[in-house]
Amino acid sequence: MAPLDTLKAQFDLIIAINGYNSLSTYRKLLAPRGRFVMIGGKSIKQILQITAFGGMLSKKAGQSFKGLLSKRCVEDLAFIAVLMDEKRLVPVIEKEIQFHEIPIGHIGITTFNL
Image (cartoon, rainbow, N blue to C red):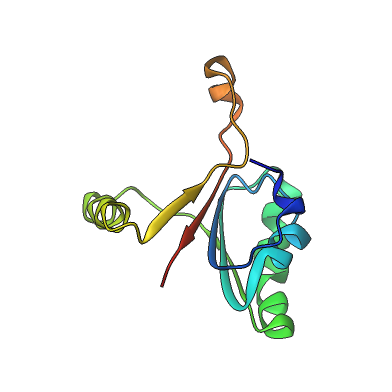
């Protein structure tokens, strides 16, 4: 798949695992009233950006920008499994990494058809 910054599509919801791309790239990919959730981040700087400026970005663009820290929950994982079975949760794989690179981090973007 092409790098995210070359995509022309827009998404209602982006869940970025480890925030591999810049916030401006994610902003371009969001629909006008889309929601962006970053779980983790590629750096402390990016985590602070979404924490400090997410609200301001949300007000300016009509989009929603949030960071997420959470604990695992069996019920939530079951709900996600149902969404995937119903094809309402569709992962978009931007980049594949080798098995030995897994400890370095995984990268992902997920779209929802709401």
